[in-house]
Length: 335
Image 1 (cartoon, one colour):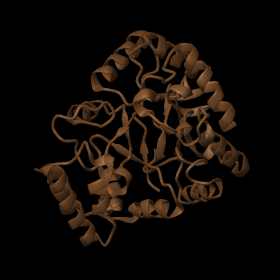
Image 2 (image 1 turned 45 degrees about the vertical axis):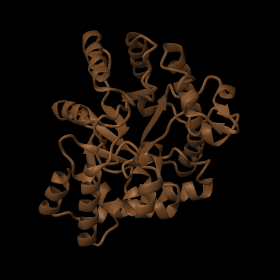
Image 3 (image 1 turned 180 degrees about the vertical axis):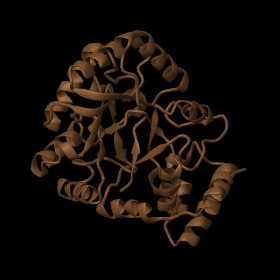
Image 4 (image 1 turned 135 degrees about the horizontal axis):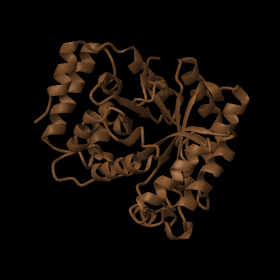
């Protein structure tokens, strides 16, 4: 598996990252372990999790299932020094009773109940993550959900302390608007604090439709910002949008398409379907291959397979060779 530099750190990370969110809940442990083994055998090193994964799958739990499973896998395999391990804090739910309504998690209520990025919260969170992961440090520590209620200075000073203590090597941010990212970077420069080297956002081949307001989906302004600041690497979650590129039925019925529906999406779906037929590959895999070809900004797709079959389908993207003409056609498609 090829690698790419993380920001301008000199650190080489896998071109394809493995998201471990549903491991240990939706994905049973034996299957999750097989996926992890296959990824490592293929040369993959970049593992992504969070302390809150997956509270919404187990009522009464604050999460931690994914980190605990990874901790067991790392202990069994002895691969801790071979992987680039990322986790996140700030997204744990404070009041679980407030977010379960009629036996289901209510995400509107959840967004009002995140633990946030206060200094004490982050310090406790990193210690909990390290305990579950069975390690003394993570390589990358994200603020999972941008917290506008806590002064940025408090959050950044706490993160600087976490890096200084050796509990995290680098920091990142997720689900954040560009203007906030610029303010974060300015404060880091002014105070000598470590600045984010990774930005984790939802990003795929489709572009969100005009008029959609969404904190987590990359827009043109954010792409432009990342092109100008190559010390930040874009880690793209939901890169295949729940697999909609392979399934017209899913595109019609899945809520993940809501921010994308329209003529531009139709044109880009037609282009990726056409190129996939030429390449003899699945459209989902072609989208992953296209993302891995992006250099300005650099993009690291973060796959989150539910099954071993889904993992193998995603890994197939590593072997797809897109021609310059096909890449140009994909780049320029749209309404």
